[in-house]
Length: 257
Image (cartoon, one colour):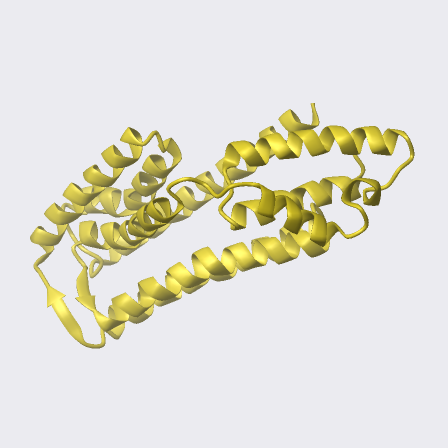
């Protein structure tokens, strides 16, 4: 059983290598090798410095330079951005409440920046400072709550302050386009064997789909539609968060064994 200091070191190493676009298989192999070395060193009464040579930061940096970058990193990055744009756009298309305007563009760019870059920076710095501790989970959880509230607040703003309208279509056309794009994104994710992403985009669109069915095709202007989609959205968020917590604990148990 490794000490908390050693586990924090491995966590920081993994986060740093992931943020630098290293191959997941290489990261896993490196982590397993280091875990064995650390276990042996601590069994002999030695500290992490006996493995890292003194500076943990320099050691992580040198390891990062040795490992090659993930092949197709740029392509995967572009695909991920397209996927995230689909996540933000498809539910509104299905609701029939989508129009392309400056507020929507700035909202999507802001969510991408905060959601991807912001989350990565927060997780890296918090994990580096507090490790796998209760305080780290509280800080990351608080940021996640802030991010969720920012998304909800942003939706309110863009619905009421559209800015400059660049393109708009009627609800029926929006619904058809949304359904087609949802099918394309799910099939594409399944073809690439990204089961989680296929399930995620379906779950995110589910509140609008259910509200649309229950209210006989009404849109967000209908109060019942807003209540139903809001309730389903909360259930979806709890489900996704619960799944991520369960997967994390399962992975931790697997690692510790």
